Length: 637
Image 1 (cartoon, rainbow, N blue to C red):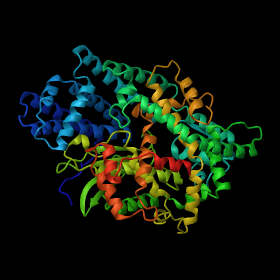
Image 2: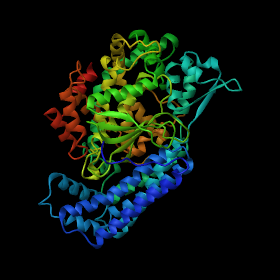
Image 3: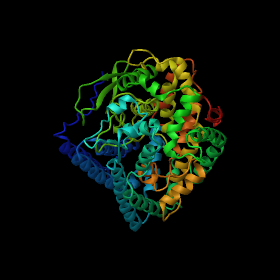
Image 4: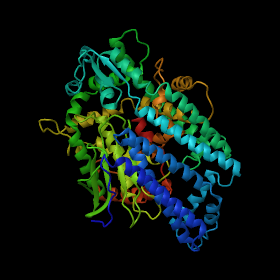
């Protein structure tokens, strides 16, 4: 077992004071280190970089705590305190990034004796200083600092409005015909005889998939597409305006150009070209499968001329059931949450040569399951699985860094925040869990780095989804699923059913790609120019890129959290998928556990973290540059 110990987290009674003390302690240490750095700069090049690294270790540790506790702690007081701490940390980081004295010390470092890793660390550091505005005049730097603080506050408000903006519908039990029995058992009628269903995932997704009552599905769709309306409309407008000014002060035409500069794609115009390329490639498949959906809808509603998003999941499920012999209600009986969670650990453990050991450790909520991650018997990290919804918690599914790993100094610690039910899972949810867990694995396996900025999931942002998207493939393999997917009677999911599931999943991938390009185009266009009416932009871009019509009186953008976190870069999901499909082509689908290929992938792509450019990591694994070919072939299947 590694001598390095994970952090000791506080009890609920201690959390408020601990969060403040930990975050402020990290900030104070960083301030002290900066003061020493400027007062007595190291004379040795490597020591200079190590001193700079130590400053960011302190800041990253504090930011990890603030980030997790602001999104996950059950106490609103703790969440608010963590958000406030993050504001202080961000303000200091902004100030530090524009400190000409510190920049002068670092820019004078002699690189001749540095190894490749240290040289890369310095190059990225100097690049980030320039992107922060260190070379701007004093007045511009002051405004950039002000903008950074305002942007963070707007971002936090945007996230909070989504997190706390849960909506609901209340309907009579008869309006829920078609719902699975376990779902109905978990949603009894209240004293008024009505069943309340929230917009949280475990409530809403089964409803729009299985409920036979079109008016109920539409009622839920209207609530889901209006989460955080109208509040986030104004917040998003403010955030877009702030970021646009920020980019222009730094000499960029748009925020999208600024943001794309450090990604694989390179510039904003290339994003638009990529969106159009995917749109064109997906159109034939999208229109073909939409026609199938519409024909099925017209059996129930003969006068229908188009299909709404309120009917999309329901009729997609009907088509899969009737034409592909895949009944999602039957499929879900094989995926009880506890078995899926353990199966995920077993599958990834075998694939990557690691194991997961449950630990008795204090966490922020009783639902959280902590595990130590072991490799060859040595602890290499700790993970926290927080997988069920609760009031005030992050509403989507994502991995958060609690602490970045540093070779010989600290273990990587990562957190998974999801919102799954406690009973049976949809197979789509199983795929999502595999996906998000891929980020966690990347964080831990890539956590043995010398430089904090390269630890874990630290590649270019438009690559970070690729390893997770590739791991989804294991959730579609019959042999893999057979190891944990059993029903209440203990029967294993039949291989023939998995084959049918895969075939049924191919249905709709064209129109799903077009929908993703609608999201990507919205993400890009909002950061290219200013618009007076964001809902009108949603409506126009949905008409251009999606094959499904806008739902009147809805405001999708207000709950689309990626417009903040990913800003203009939502395209990255599809960009990463192109690479993921190419990487997966190296595996033999008849033997997904092949130790040589899996080990090479682990060691060439995941373990290096951000110590190399993503394109080089992929080339190291594949033995060639990545191509569009595997994705195009998959889309055409």
